Structure formats: C-alpha cells, structure tokens
Length: 314
Image 1 (cartoon, rainbow, N blue to C red):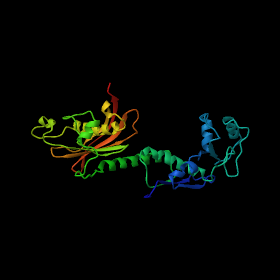
Image 2 (tube, one colour):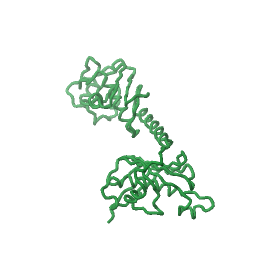
Image 3 (cartoon, rainbow, N blue to C red):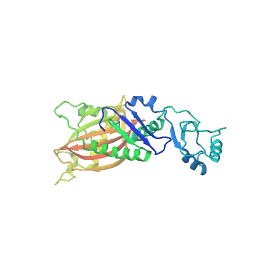
Image 4 (cartoon, one colour):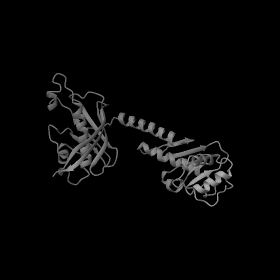
C-alpha cells in the first residue's frame, strides 16, 4: 500500500490454540534493531518430534528458538529433547511454550515473521517506500513477491526515459570528458556528461552523418552499430568509476563482462542518444558493475548489464 516510508505489518495464524493469532507492525525502519532484530525463530513440538525421529536436529539449540507445544508432551519425547539439547529437565510453561527461555514479547512469533519479511524483501535491491501487509508470510511467498517486485521495478526503470534540457550547460563538456577518459576521436563516443553522482551517470551523444562508422555501416541505410552503443554506455560508466580516483589520466578502463544485452530500436543519423548507467553494487577495487540504458526519441534503444575494471597505466 502507498506510504511515505517503509512500513511492514505481519499477521500470523497457524490455526493452533497455543499460538493463536498474532500481529506485529514496524512503522519506522529505524526501530528495527530495538523492536524486531532480536525476535527469535520458533517451531511447534510436532515439528521438533519429526526432526528428532530423523536425527536432523543435532545443530539445534533451545536457547535461541521458541518451541510452542501444540500436542501432549509424551515421556519419550521429553527424554529425546533432554538428550538432544543437553537439558536436565524439560517442562511446559503456562503460556504453552517449553521452559527453555522467556519470550522477549508476547507477539515474538509475529515479530520474527516480520524480520523474515524485511530480510527477504532486501533481495529486491531497492529501498522500498510503502506499506507491506503480509498475511501468514513465509520465505517462499516472501521471495516470490520480492522477485515480482524487482521485475516491476526493473521494467519501470527501463521505461523511465530521462528528459533533459540540452540547451543548459552540461556538467562536463567534451574537453572535461577527455581529461578523464583516455579515448579519443573517432572512438570517443560521449559528447557530454549531464549528471554524475556516487552511484549513477548520465551522458549524451549526438549521432551525425559524418560518423566514421557510417562509411561502411551501411552507406545506403546508415545504422549505428549496436556494439558501439554498448561501448558508449561503457564509456559513461568509465567516467563514473574514474571519477573516484584523484588521477584518472593515469588509468585505463577494460571490459570484464557483458550480460543481458538487448537492442530495441535502430539508432540513425540525427538521433540524440542519452545514456544512463547505475551501479548494481558499490565500486570495489576499481571494479564497476552497472546497469546501463540508452534512449533516443523518447524510447529505449539498448540496455546491458556491464562490468569493467580500471587499471593503472604502467
């Protein structure tokens, strides 16, 4: 649901009297550490019995898990639990849980499910602004939702064509670009840098009929080669990664990997290409992993996931 900040509500109901129905809400992500992070996992006695029968609980520890007793605790099960968890005695508390620990909160089970939702939705890779209401959540449904959400976000980013006033002075003109990039005409494929931050870069290229590659591709029906569109996007990424070092003139940028390369529209003489590249992961050891898009005439023309590394000139 729409909300001004990231909020999560979980509703838990396993159809058991001992646990009943529980709800938990996190209204501010800043409260996660104090209110949610220490909510422990839980299970039911019948699940523990199954694990014991199959000798699958050797790494278990009753000190960090809540066990809800949803059936009668037999003498044989009691003995197995005492042995498995190295306890002298095991009893049931009045609130229906084993006497191995005290609950941090009455709704600790719901809070742990909320913790799971937070962790699983972190796989989306994007900060969420909105309220998530999860009814009977589990890892499978959480991660399925995370994949669906990531797919929608990726589609929206792809189709979100950036609009810029090209009559305004650029952040970097061709001279400043050449101060950073080692490329030179005819292989310098970025004319302007319009935006630059720690995580993204936006560049521009005017495609003209007097480009060298149009001499042979194709004289009668000129089309900008797709590989050069990718190269231009990579050069924008080069500006991004080289802007992180104090002496960019002493570095070269090399491709490491290209994935999910797609060409959507032809690029023709007279088109103005806008390139947008965003980091997928933070820059580490001079390695830049980014998602790049190219737009022209209000449409996406190419996209690719790129990885490059800068190397100091010897």
